[in-house]
Image: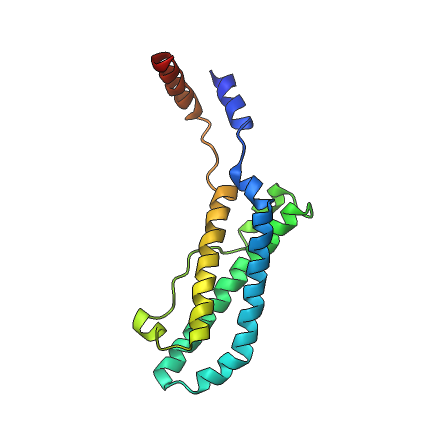
Length: 170
């Protein structure tokens, strides 16, 4: 039974690996890098001018939200670049797992309350919400690729249950 369990673990196809090397990942990568560029252009140009026109408390909220946006995007860009390096063969999966601890990839909510967020410039709101959607997709893909490994100790129990089901339903 243990030999069969090891075979199941070795023969398991990782959906995350397939997604990471797919056209969908390439699209996600382009989308992420474009969002980084768009955000930088906005924050350095029109956003800077718009923030100067805000009342003091809203200007502080703008600063907090723009810092959170920048941090979120830098984490996402780092993860996307790391995964692209694996996909292109510049980095092994094992090396990426070692480097991954340097990339803090964690869900970040908005920095401000919904009422204050609604008073911020529309473009900052759009960028923050787009970055959150991108973050959710990257976190999901990260879980698929680097998530918890298959628990080999539980595979024999699963195989036993499958055998029981086969016997019951022929």
